[in-house]
Every structure is written in C-alpha cells, then in structure tokens.
Length: 326
Image (cartoon, rainbow, N blue to C red):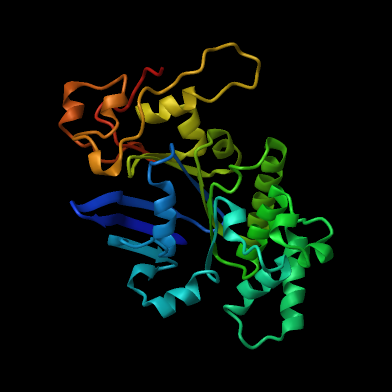
C-alpha cells in the first residue's frame, strides 16, 4: 500500500560565499495514514529544516536541491507555488515550535483561525467560518472557547496558545500533520495533555503525523516509528519498541543513556562528549565518529549507508549490529 507521505532522498542546501552547505542530506522516510513518525536528535541535527523542506518553507538562500516529497503519490516539489499553497494548510499542516512567534499579536484568536479557513474557502460566509473556528477550539478542549475567540495571544497561557496552534492546523482537516517540537516550552503536566490531545485527534481523523522532538520520553509516548537524525542524516530507523529496547547506532544508545529513569534507580546518567558539528565542517567518514566510543579507524574513512539489521530496523553504522551498549 502506498504511504501517505513518502520522502525520497531529500537534500536541502544553503548557498554561501564559499559554496553550497548541506543541512539535510539525502533523507528518505515514510509515514502511513493514522501512524506517527517521530524524528529525534539534538539541536542542530537538521530536524526542523527537514520539516520546513516538506512544507516548502525553507528560507532563502536555502532550497531543496534534490529528492521527492510524495503526498499520496503527488510530488510536492514539482508543484508551482500556487498549487503548493492549495496543499499547504489544507492537505498538510504544521504546528511550529513557539506559538507566541507564530500567532499574530494584533488579531484575536478567532480572527486568526477564521483566516486559516478563509485561505482555502473564499465562498463561505463569515458566520459559518466563525462557527467552524469555535468548533475547532472545542475539539482541542479549550476552556471557555467562546471567550477565547475574542482574546489576543498574550492573554493566554503557553498551553492555551499551543492548543490554538493545533486548532488552526487541524481546522481544515489535513491528511498530514507536521509538529515541530510542539511541547518544548510547556511544563510536564501541560505537555502530557497536549500529547494525549494529539493522539486522540489522530484516532478520530486518521491523519498521519510527523512529530519532531529531542525528547525521547515524548517519543516513547507518541511514536509508532522513530527516525534518529545526526548531522543532517538519518542514522537509525525502527519501530519505537525495537529502537528503545535494542538501539543499534552509538548515537541512539547515547541519547537513550542520557534519559533519567523514573523508577528511582540511582544509575549515573551518560553524557555524549562533544557537540553536533556545524554543517560547513562535517567530518569525513561517519559524522558521529569523533564523539563515538565504538569508533574504529575505518569509521573516519567510510560514510556508512543505512542498512537493515532486522527487516524493520535500519542503521548507518559500520559496527552494527552492536551487542554491547554504554
């Protein structure tokens, strides 16, 4: 069966005075209807730029230089801008990291949701659009939705603003939702409410979800499948249970070892030495090898390709499958 979203060898580059710099490097992933793909990695790994590439919102001087983004078989990268506008916000929608920078401070919440509808519906009257906007706030379980319609973003809490962003994204009933770190700035209790809300809405609508995060605790809550990104590349991909129980890339192992246990265990947390390299200074060979406790001399010379260690589990590591973990 054809996946809802099929990302094929997508590469995104930025033009500089010294030549093109690659931010997203030949990424291939897919998402089925009603399923959630989590893309995880540290800041600077290329996760957010991949999401902007899918939406064709890469800021200048960047561009998606190669690849295909197939939504239900239609290549979005081949569409002209007018055709893409009819897809963006209607068939696929996005929730951005920080709602306070995404919401317009001088318009009410109701006006902004109505505008999201009007972009794709120029014939329906204002009253009907306002009714749909109110229904969207009810759907995301907003308290006192009639009052919220008349309020401005600064009058709402962080959790309320994030619910508004979800309402705006889902008011057109998209087939695909891209959520870029939608819970990062929220406290733990509100974060749990937002995750539960997204899961419920997905069950009701059957939409596919691409969920971008650096938080592996979130991944275990919401993902069906996980892709781990490092330095612009996917280095591991697996069903969530397989990835958490048997990680095969040293970077994934390090990320999981850095998550605190909730059972009261006193095990010392692991920290991965070093930082993600800048896109203009990626090392030769495996890009993780300067930080890797498992690296061999060959890792500095050979860039590993994704390969299957089980039918559903792929990893880009010369030493996989790994039997020892940190």
